[in-house]
Image (cartoon, rainbow, N blue to C red; front, side, top):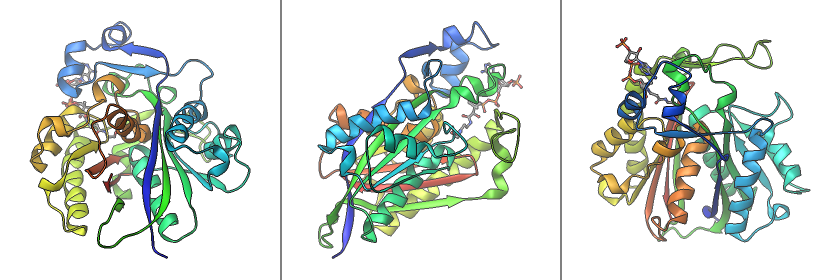
Length: 323
Ligand code: UT7
């Protein structure tokens, strides 16, 4: 039998604490005007002391499972995309597996920074197409507040904490009427790794790393690479820009979202925007935005949803889904 992957439930979670631009401007040399004008960000959520990536991931997972009508024990795989795992090892995914009381199956983390959710969805889709899993939980979860240099105004205003999750299920594929995940497209270019990185970190480096970014360079790469991978995804499915109902992009900067939408000929109200309220939540941003638009009824059955992201590595990718 040939299988395809359907997203049958979404969920998300944001920590209670909100940090507004105005509040942030009291601790670092910036202004609400600068942040809004250059990024579109107005506020971000910040995890409370002791609240970890696994905690956020678990909350999002429970909501996605509830929406899918499944329990943890129904899952055969958990993939957590994160840059801020609770520990160097074991994986955050295994911690979530225990929290969900899932006895069998497997769980592992994926590290592709802001593209992590697209990478995770792609891996899940391939497991399903290979007939190796039936119900997979893909989570993007981050506490970027832990790796921010709160004295560096060029990065600390940009990021926030949060988690988003989807349940992906194997369905029999119908070649004459393709639904679910149509295709995924992943890329990376390790020669560009110095544009966005942490200056330390776990494992082979004993210091705690903080985010460092050449913002203008990243911006330039984001605009061109995202346009190219979107084009690649449409061509692979014999679709055109006018077939897209919803763009659910990685939420890094509203100016990047506007530029991508313009290139695709999409109207502003076809783009799901959460960057104003969530800021950049790295691997969590796409599933957070997706869950927002599913729950408020914007995304409807039969519609074509395009997701894309770019992040450190550099990594980038896209996924096309017929809802
Ligand atoms: O999720 C991974 C992908 N990440 C991204 O896609 C991020 C891509 N990059 C960006 O979004 C933008 O480059 C930024 C928002 C990070 C920066 O915006 P920009 O328009 O590229 O500004 P810039 O870095 O060129 O800085 C312009 C000016 C500088 O001052 P001078 O040298 O012109 O006097 C900065 O020092 O703005 C200054 N600046 C700030 N001023 C007030 C930088 N950060 C701030 C700040 N508040 N927070």
